[in-house]
Image (cartoon, rainbow, N blue to C red):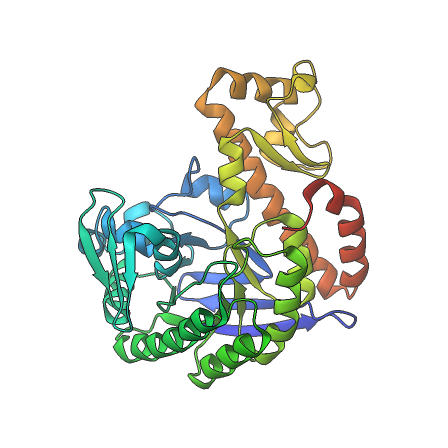
Length: 372
């Protein structure tokens, strides 16, 4: 089980700093969680993740179920032992992956039938089956099975997803046999009354933490923040709040100001494999010819291993040459940049200057990163 302690709440915004205590260590919030979809954060070893300050990583229930299989992971002693990661782990329920495979699945009140992306075989996820898989994987924090809707979505479909997610959450809670921390998930698409109703229903089930799902799926950023603004206050003050799938730097800062504690996203690792760096100057496409003879650090304002050791010219060369090291170094830097940004935000909250920190960060970075 977990415990959440609020350390400080900003006086001018809703930002909070806390400590989330888990069986595999304490997590200082707000926190960005690198995504390790298939029992690995792409291009990074556990020791490297520790070196950049990663406190918790994610595993993906859907993909781990398909390969190598949850029974094998159980035999290996759980995901921590299997992948050599000693710190906390969170696993999602696979709901988002099923949502993204709209042409390969069928959703009913009982569960979700889907075809494997590995071999095309047919499988069926019920709330009970998902809990069985997540218990075998053995993460510290696990998620209920939910129905994530697309954007835009008609109100009747969004309402049906709210009811279904609530009913599935009850079944997940009833099926749980371990002391893993099971988080509920709020849905409701872009409809204020549905979001509020979903939050109220989920809170009634008294989970140790709460996630807000169905965001960053194509809706305008202004609408996303509006949804957070009226949804987050319904969630209990004394429990952690998690927005799923959010990783753009400016969006993280804006969401922290609205009272969110936890985030995850594949963005920093995915764009790294495409030659993109997240820096204090915004997004840099390292394939750009202007970096060919730029011997300055990747980000002169950042002090990670990559920025201290390698030049923009060298990293561009690696990217242009298709060398694996290029993707590794950009992944290292991008994750370190987001983790360090979260640490800076936490320090600003504790020192009661987050409002100024937020305004400065957004004014300096919104043009470069946007808020998406």
